[in-house]
Length: 74
Image 1 (cartoon, rainbow, N blue to C red):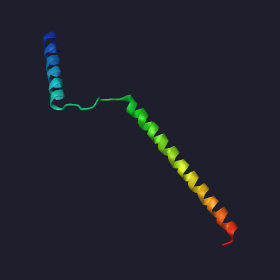
Image 2 (image 1 turned 90 degrees about the vertical axis):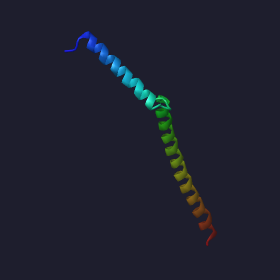
Image 3 (image 1 turned 30 degrees about the horizontal axis):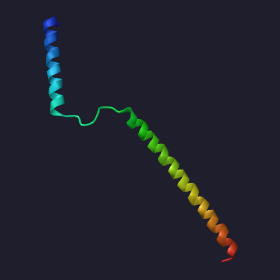
Image 4 (image 1 turned 180 degrees about the horizontal axis):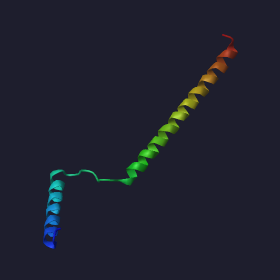
């Protein structure tokens, strides 16, 4: 088992290693931004809504086209 002196030495070494890692690999953006996840979810929902509106409008235009030109007797 480690005594108090060895524990302190290990903590110091771990702290030095951590500082070295942080200095050698600078992190340009924060580790975690909760807003990113919310924005991603909202973007997916918006894309789904846009797709459904596009399909709905395409079907409606198709129906209107046939209703108009079938009445012309072509």
